[in-house]
Length: 178
Image (cartoon, rainbow, N blue to C red; front, side):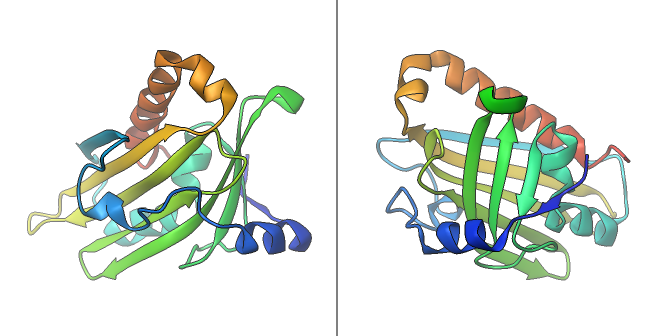
């Protein structure tokens, strides 16, 4: 798989759409009332911070985790819109998001994106790489969410299981080369 370019009409619709939650930026501030909170980290085996950052900003983390990805920009930037699909064919789940914030520091890189209308959940997820003085790279994933669609509400605990499975895939994805 490779990251595809979103068609201009889809970009325009997603860029005009409002976030489906009011707490934009809150993945950086802590748990939010009324939302499920998820926070996980993993140290990467790789030591190439610049390349790991490039993989993150070019949607490879998502692609290597099994999502089909189409984005308005690659590498991503503030305001980039992305449409991901989980599953195959017409039964796949649409996952539209917009990048709400970007971190671009010498030893810290990442972004947060928020859900847009049509996403089964409502909330925000951040992906942050940190490199310490020894060269170790850590990926931190933080999210807050609640069901936004009838399917997600009916799925109950299954939705949380899917989120945890995808987070585990994300934490392993940047060590994969493809």
